[in-house]
Length: 128
Image (cartoon, rainbow, N blue to C red; front, side, top):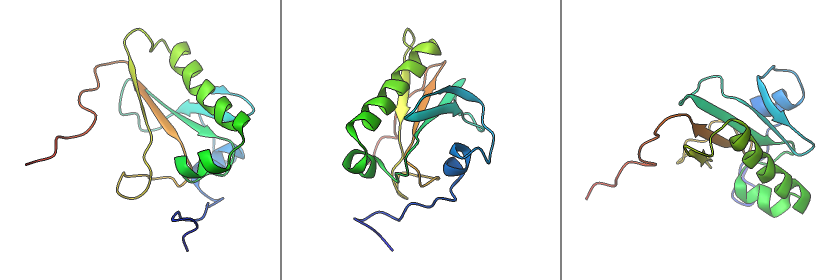
């Protein structure tokens, strides 16, 4: 059943389990609002996931229902992680997949931080 066009939050998803300490992760940084950890299947030399600690399915869900402190704290942690990992000088990409068409695999809002090499095009060109 969809709620506001989104699937309901699944408290058994892998990120919820990581937040509860049921599954280990290689932490980069954590605060009251978010957790950053290394992806177990990195797609670049640096590939870190940042997840809010609340139960949010998508960016729309997060920005509509999270508190101002949660939103600011989450994005602040994203920036701190990129800086701490030395990505500012060479550049980095922040990516978030929302829904099936975008390839979202875990129904918990999260962003990927990629860096450490040239990343190429963001998406493939549309064919004419």
